[in-house]
Amino acid sequence: MTTTLALADPPRTIPVSASGACCAPLVREAADPQTAIEIAHVFKALSDPTRVRLLSIVAAHDGGEACVCDLTEPVGLSQPTVSHHLKLLVEAGLLTREQRGKWGYYSVVPGALNRLGVLLTDVTATEPTS
Image 1: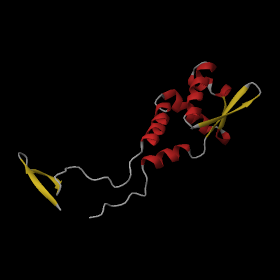
Image 2: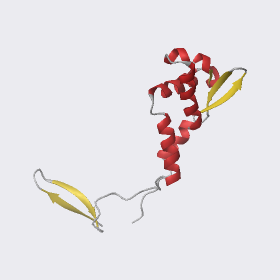
Image 3: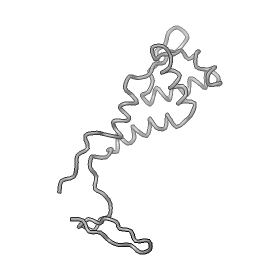
Image 4: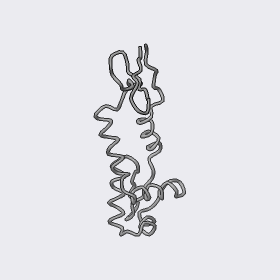
């Protein structure tokens, strides 16, 4: 059962549950502590604009793969700095790295960003029972 309380000027109402709580109940399970840590790790990797650009550039290459030698010029940084950024993206599970001779080649992990979205917007949410 929900009751409504009238507030003063201007008149507004807010729903209040029978238990007196004013907040809506959870309709699905929230992220557990370990999942929250994993999601935060990915967001931390994506919190830098250079890393977002690098991920985008790799994804835009033919086959979703690029050599580190192709990534320095577009972002205007040295190869060691670009390699550091790429390492963080690999550690976050967004890219993979393969060594070919003296160059590292990076690929987007299939479905990595989709999995992140699913963790945040699980569509299996259920309606609360009355």
